[in-house]
Every structure is written in C-alpha cells, then in structure tokens.
Length: 105
Image (cartoon, rainbow, N blue to C red; front, side, top):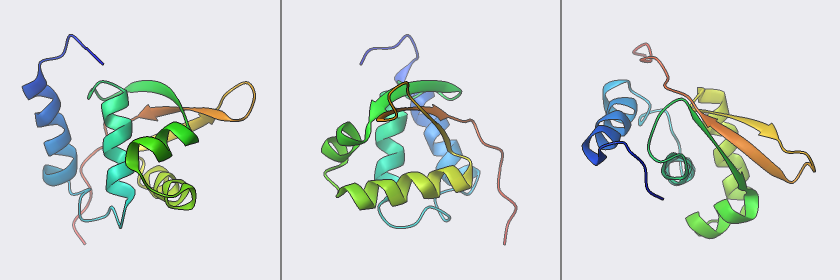
C-alpha cells in the first residue's frame, strides 16, 4: 500500500503512540500484532479508516480467529481502534485513532 506520507512520519507516529504515550505497556499479548496490521492497513496514518475482514486480519497476523477478536476488543477498550460493522455484518471498518497520552499508573 502506497501513501503520500513520509515513512519517517509514520514511524514517529507509531513510536509516539506506543512508547511516548504509554500504550505499549497497556497492550497485552498478541493485540500488538493486530494493532500493527491495522495501522499498516491505514497506511500508517492516524485518524483514518480501513475496511478489512476478520479473515484478512487472521491471515495477515497468522493468529487464530479468537486471538484476533480478543486483540481487537482490547484495542477498542484502549481507544486505539473503533470498529463499525459493514453492510452485511461480516466486514468491519476500523478507524485508527490518534489517542492522547495515558495517565501513569
């Protein structure tokens, strides 16, 4: 997938979300893989949406369907992605948010 965004900008944004804003410490298990695949699918840019099926996520992450579903639920609880069901209920659109910094625990 090709975008107009500079690759360094994409890396900086992902680094900011995961490290500087504290989300890496909150993402558990395989959810980080799911997050990275969704971020890649939106071209590495925040505040964008992508329509992708569960089967595509499973194939891209090489994780089981239940693991991907659990990862997506975790990412939604953290506010990193927001999902909406497509017209037939099988394909969802995932919006990748540009989340605020987390409060330190």
